[in-house]
Length: 337
Image 1 (cartoon, rainbow, N blue to C red):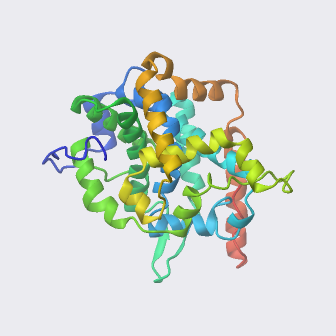
Image 2: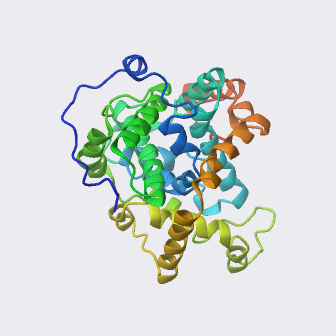
């Protein structure tokens, strides 16, 4: 159960604009802020798989992934290989976390990259309704599905946090959302929890995409260079990775959402959850407080991040031309990297 699920929501309903929020609070995303503390902490690793699962539990977002995603799309998911899945996870992590850890100039580039990546994520739902990733409500719903697991992971593994800390962390995540055009989420964490119950949860559906992503650690995709390795052997080799990913789902994902997609812990999973909880309560915060942040900072400084390679401005501009040309010719849309 979410430690803050019983929090009494505030009554204020007027939504603050991005500029108003910045003027009112200053930048609540930099080092020393609650948002930076939460997103830098090692518990953020536990939010990764829940995030990827949460954001596709919506009809529009699930259809967008089914139609367009190079890893979880319906046309490719049965043949996904280990390297492809890992690269996709790292790309996603780079882009979302890069909004926090990059400098102002690179933040702007990352924000534009995220927006451009979703430009052509559109199509038609089963009932004939058009969907687009940029739809205001869907964009906000998706961002909510990203920030909630991060805050939950921190609070579940470190214990209940003060109202002030949670509000500050939430404001910081709203400011990160402001960078990519997220609009319509409530101004306070108390109101956000009300939004979660009354608007987010009712739109959460049992989707094939959600089941596929949540079950990836059960049988981790084998490498393209060695598809002959027995699945059982491959699972054993990567047991530590699988264990963290699976355990993260049972620790962070809300039980009702796990039930929705039929993800239930085995007795061994329950033992693993207990062990992980004990470890996080025993290990000094000084050892874990910058674990995720240090990893991302090193990647930004020394790594070859996606927005410098296949998601660079030049690469995205070239893909945009290809898509527009294909549409003009009535051809299928080129697949995204």
